[in-house]
Image 1 (spheres, rainbow, N blue to C red):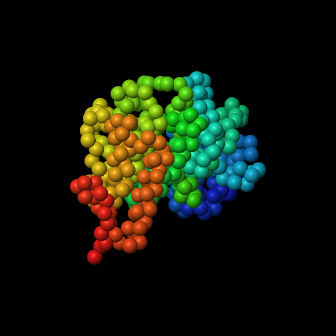
Image 2 (cartoon, helix red, strand yellow):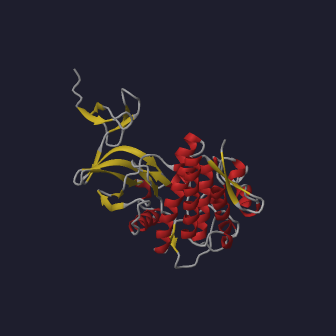
Image 3 (cartoon, rainbow, N blue to C red):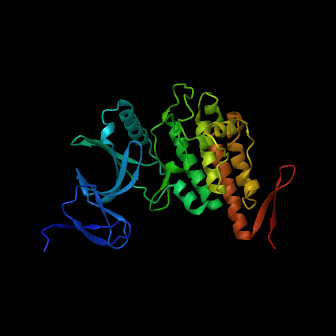
Length: 334
């Protein structure tokens, strides 16, 4: 008989209880005997028990953890050990913590604590482990129009609050919108955020993601909240149609398309997309910031109106169409 001590843990893949070797190093994994999902040896940091890995990024790994004091699930982000002496990475880690902690909004990930334990820096956050908008686009090709509008309204509201606290996010993309157990979208990753109080010019189009970058950033013009708004528009366009607004074989051609190529309206990509939704995204993706919505309130109202009209259409079977003069009218399916 083996003398190996066993430890009972819960598999995060199939939720079954399983025994794993008790001498496994903390955070190491073995396959679940039932589903094959990696089962992790828990690790304790103060009152937090890290139970399974959620994601991995440039600055660290994120784990699902149990707060033994408050009896709730949280997310713990451990900073990579090799970055401990990297002043730029450390400042970005601190910046993300401070930026999120200063904002109290349902659709911005909440920061509970930022601490150090035995030389390990870590961030304690609200848990949002039901995948990202990027995951959902990849799995389903595109999302229902109503869901896209709901996400747009909520993230626009989150960005409006950040703006009122003089913050630009600067990296809006599907991968930075996560969902929690209640299917609420949560804006994350404020590592590139900066204050609106100091005027800056965009130093590089790599500050952000080329598929979602605003034309003014590409042209090295000053960024404003309208740059974040454009990136949100690109994100919603991708989720709605299953395609990014502009595609090209190289990064150079891609960023040039944001500046020079005319946008294909969403309802020209998919005719079933309603005119009000399509029109709102066309406006928010205008090349010139001055031609976009001039506030998040305006953008949100436009999305809310599109949502209301979509609900009416779904309940009555009516379809919104647009005349050559731009007037929206409705007709009922036979």
